[in-house]
Image 1 (tube, rainbow, N blue to C red):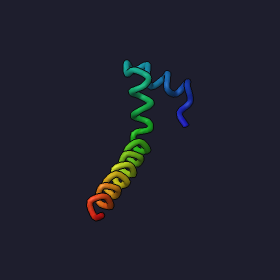
Image 2: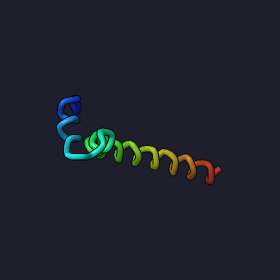
Image 3: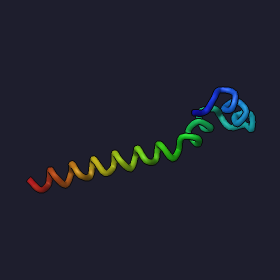
Length: 50
């Protein structure tokens, strides 16, 4: 987990804090989006099959 001090150090490069945090969690966010896409496409396929 990203600690506040680390985030502030990273943010001191000029990036807004939320950008730093998003970049830090980007891989996890991408995995979650892929899961959601798989679920929604699966639901769409199930709906069209019926």
